[in-house]
Image (cartoon, rainbow, N blue to C red; front, side, top):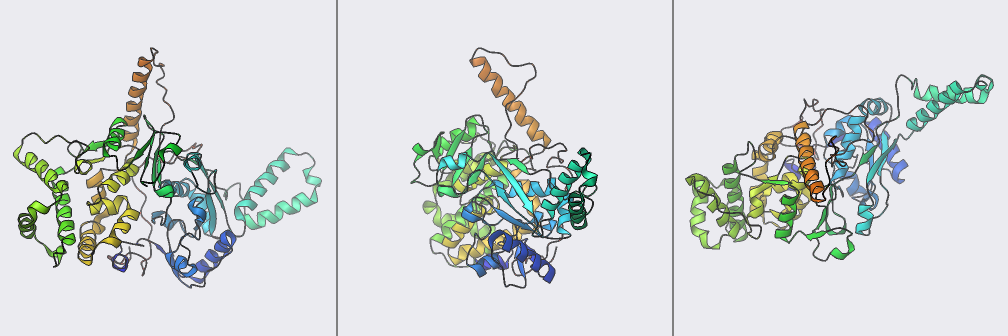
Length: 498
């Protein structure tokens, strides 16, 4: 894996912690959370404050993620919001933690100027042992404080102020006055400069978890279902429709029934020719690497690849021939071959539609299309690293060089080109219109009528604070400038500091 680390494809975009003050703050928070400390004088941290160096030092990759269930965090700077979340057991954890930072940016900025902010993503269970444990998680509450207790002190002061204003005799209670003065000396004027996060509860809708062998939980859709990855998983233990990820027809039916995917031909703004040609290259290189062909695969030219196709034509996998047939139909302007779920190339012709669960669906598609190494790396990194360990050196070199040259230099541009822009208000409105249409159909089948208000059931948004009196701009609006993130042995290595 060192090749990936050195090229900035693993442990990239982490924040460097090297000043004695920051190290001391981190240790104070770490000791409060776990009872442990680090002897390292510098290290790098992700969105949650997890450090791969400290994980190696403590020989515990879950040192702030007990049982992989209630993720703890340590915030030293808001620059962590631009970092990845490593070792996430739930696909929603990063989105919730980022949204918490965004929703409480001013308060967290004030707190991190004085101390570290530590806390936990708390749900209703402490260990995942069954599907029922997973389905019991409906909301996540973010509990936060500082090692010196600034948040709890601020809340106590606000409570004291409220009681003081409501009481006619508070002026004569010297103990209460002394306590309020002492709290004010520690936290300042909390009426003007609040130190308590206000948006702390988030809904957990559809998600992926690595627990129980890997499960995709879709419960906020038209036809809910659970898709399991472990062949030994017992579907009878799930109190909802359970589908094996190996059952291509059932997975395809589920995705179509809930309008979660679109073909690459219907995707607006997508260069389907370029995408399919690139997938042919990935499949061909995988075959060459597995067949023992030596040489520098990353240096193969278009003529070299064409020649390799002729040499290995009969041995190439069925996915290659089916995608090639699609490309011929496009180039010749003839009817495209029909796509059937039972065909190996079926999912290579799909991408997620634009909706709130786009990243989750692309995560699922990357799982069932592992030969597209670019999509696998972007959408499902844990599975990418799993496959990477199994590849030979020739393919590792090819994939690493491709990602550095074709993805790392313009991550945002590549993502937009492949998957479309981040779903914004248009996608949300379109989703609501679609769901209203589904509601009308369902009611008509029951012989009823649609309310004139057009009210919808609760929608499966991305993490949204409950309540949110002042919603933040939807994704797709003008982004905030990215904060500077220090480079280093665990940070980005391809372009230096940025």
